[in-house]
Length: 368
Image (cartoon, rainbow, N blue to C red; front, side):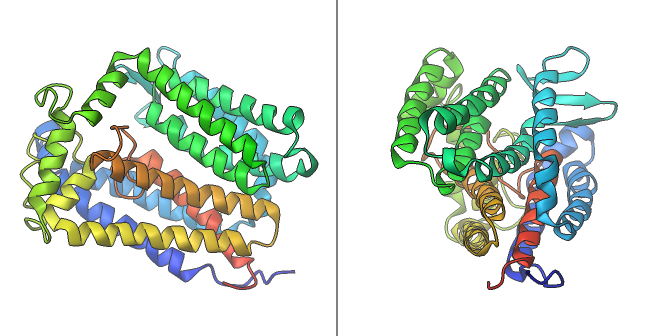
């Protein structure tokens, strides 16, 4: 038996808190112009993130790290099933909230949340239970591989209908990481990668806005005032920051030039205000998070804990990598937010719950 009174991993805790504080500081700075314009309050986004994201997130993270991670086995299927219902409810008029052509939110009175943010966690828990309980089937084509594809197919269909291709990409990467670490055949993973590439180009071909994003990625100079506007403004912000930046609070692009400065574009504001040095500090924090998370996975006392730790760590790491790469012009724009840093209460709360579960797993590890 592992000691239950062992403290959670301190490095992971400190890294997570540093990312959260970093995010609050940058939202306060990056959101001042758009907050003033939309709500006549320069610190609306900061206050909203603090009171509806950080504070409840801290409470839930604390509770999650107190709950034995094996408890989640009992309710993993229920949570996943409820989540699928939520994903369907976003399309119900009066309940689902449509914004800029996308149906990604559920409105409950004054509150709204994104079921896809909850999905990242519930899918990890469900897959961990399913794969742990199917040890002899993981390498079987008809009883392991095809059912896994069926699960991804249902989830993928509901996400792409919203539509949200960026979140679909993150979700697939999370699921494949858990599946691979459970002992899946390399040939099955290779087949999924090949099928994913084909599906990607098919999805791009049949939606003009996705094709536009791909074309802008290949030719950033294309239509700089139209479809290429966001990436060009982002690159301008990144380039103007130089090594040390223009100074915290001194961004020019946040003044109604760069779209979503507190959302998926916040990394560009970080580069502009605190430069390459500040961006490097942020990347280092995510690397530290990844290294510590994967170390917890390696030392987890059982397969369920190992798979959950891999899933949660992959989720945060892949999402950060995709956001930073997209806003830097290394991959097409996705709309995926930067974990712990971008504005968004639902994303922050479920990320912090995930960290809480990861911290509880660390308490059961014999060595760290």
